Length: 88
Image (cartoon, rainbow, N blue to C red; front, side):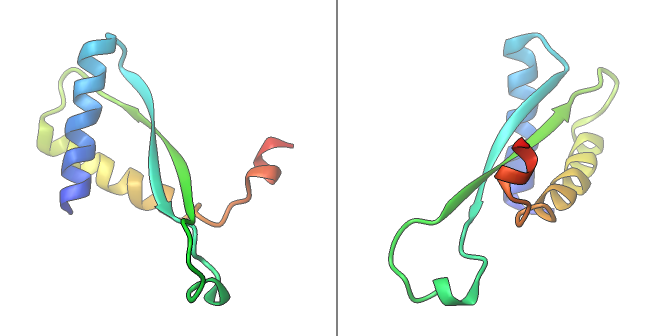
């Protein structure tokens, strides 16, 4: 578990409380420098990954943190998935 996962889980609970919904979609920024030839180039390469989260009423924060840890790991495996493929 990382600080990012803990803050993400806290933000998920916060969004759930202020929106009144159990399911939310949160965008996570990831590095867009996936090819070795892009490493020496200056500039900002950022991609966003949508993460669909849900808050169950009987979950504790630690249970929710464990679930989001697995959810985020699965989401980060999709970094190389092209948007144009998803869109079509």
